[in-house]
Length: 79
Image (spheres, rainbow, N blue to C red):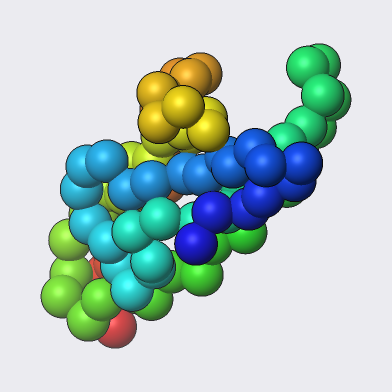
């Protein structure tokens, strides 16, 4: 579901890599240029030992990507 404010929807989507239990699309609340924003995504760590990467991209209400993609790397090691 996309966040809507005054008819405008912004979202972030998984564009490459491991989903890690997260939804493939999440609401992205608008922020003013030059300000900080907090993104919260809950990932589930897999059991298999290896490196996982989940890459995301922000999209505007027109469906076009904006900004640079961002990612998280998770390193899973056996106990």
